[in-house]
Image 1 (cartoon, one colour):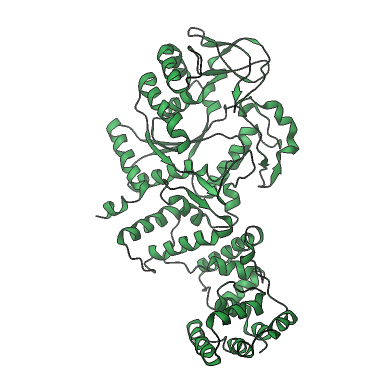
Image 2 (cartoon, one colour):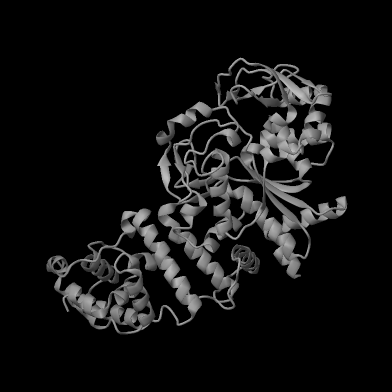
Length: 537
């Protein structure tokens, strides 16, 4: 029964299929994901890794063996220069600072120099940043580089197969890339003279070489200028084109399952299935198509500079809350509104309470699925439900006091226990919420407490009844939250003041806004003396 309930979670369903395939084939199933280190890989690209990781984790939890690998497509050509690029310290730079990189368009990423001079190449630099972000999430796939696989001869067998089956290959190319000339060879050589990737026009199976005239390569509706060199190159000094390279990697790694974005479904995946069946003669992996992520309603684009990497997101939310976002069903397009990060955090906090049976949930199935999502998202689960500070409240408080003062006030008010874990989580959330407030919070979430004189001027324009209610609120601030709320309802009724008017007036006196953070907890955190001063008590 427990297994049936857990199977409602998408990753558990895929794990079961992957295990069954491994047993059918009599070998350990392999889960693979892949990225091209063309620049700072954004959090949308992280879908590849985490949709693979959750399935891998589910398989391991079931007591089965599984390998989890991550590839770097570092022999792909440099197609364009991103608008901004990140150094190893996490600082973004305008690509305009590195004009010389333009000279390497069309070159393999593994041969493009690192713009900061700190790593072996462009590809190693951005792969390092990418993998460090992944590892900060406690996700640790085995990393490999395509460049190494080519040098080690791991692709030789598949390159030779493509050449030997040139007629069948030509048919597949025509089926999926009708614009290519008949007899087109889906292989690029690295020109030994200029270093650019260029399409080949022939091959020698005995010598294991390809022949070419360096004429550049069509990249993103543009064409790079080749040097015109005519000659030969070994197979290992080139690469299969993507449609044939991706299936070759499935074969090399015995891939049983690999997730990919919907942009690959119609083209690369469908042609890949045909290549596996008709050229490599191997069963393709279990596919899983996920929807794109949007940030602030827009698709992320490295070339436009609209990118956020893992390291950016871990400045505003805990890794477990970030992972929780990816544990949701992948078939639905999701929009990460940076100005509303607190909504996602609230959802994670609720899931945590559900997991520890500290919250009610109407649907048993939904509750089990939520628990499983939480289970997958938290690398080291606490023994009991942690006492977390509400994110919006934390952001408001952190805009008024420094972190140490916030912690002091939260402890005094009982929001933080003496538990080392609760203290750690509270401080971490305050720091994250403070960074969010400074960098991403919309105007309505920004907080600046009025000075005494400013509050006095504001109160002068209020009705007498409203002023009396505000004074009473300040005087009663020592009461428990629920009791205070009930007493304020009575005070407002007695003075003929609507509750909505009371809240609006209180926010105006405190913040010069008609709304803000939850009033009673925020006022308590400010302290009775300060609130009395601002309310005219």
